[in-house]
Image (cartoon, rainbow, N blue to C red):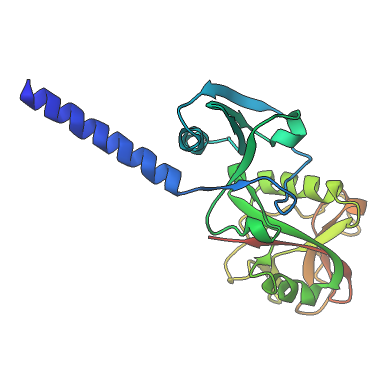
Length: 237
């Protein structure tokens, strides 16, 4: 009996420690004018539950793979796939979940299912200046390394009232396009629809950029450094 009790206590301790570690991977920011959100995300409530405290509400959200924000009031915890203000007006305190390395207090937005921390810079810049602009925000030019991220970034651009296209991370070495660290691209979406202008055409000089814009339905094109577009920067862990 003593051994069984000891085992139960040990198992409970291990589970509690695991929950604690999961919670500490995230932080929660109180929604307000200084916290930006991806307002185009589909409005959807994930779960409504009765909890003992705001910390328990945090924990439930942290343990869910798709919880992006919560509302807490009087031991009621509402989890959202999107955000409270895009679903319906709710009383209580609204919080968004984010990773500690994502500076949401400086305009960055954390998207959990992509582990993405991004900010939209609407000012148009030449492609060779895009990286410098992101550096000023302690970030890097956005890298599109999956179909899911491509689709999300397209939605970000479509939702913006100023920019219609952006530069994305990539470098032309004279023989091929690579990631900024010199390794092969993890994902590509080159425009090959026009047989007279199959991308990348690599007609520019070294230093040209990859860009996506609405006129080409956001397929990838290579651009000379004289082109100007908006910029999306990302902070990475």
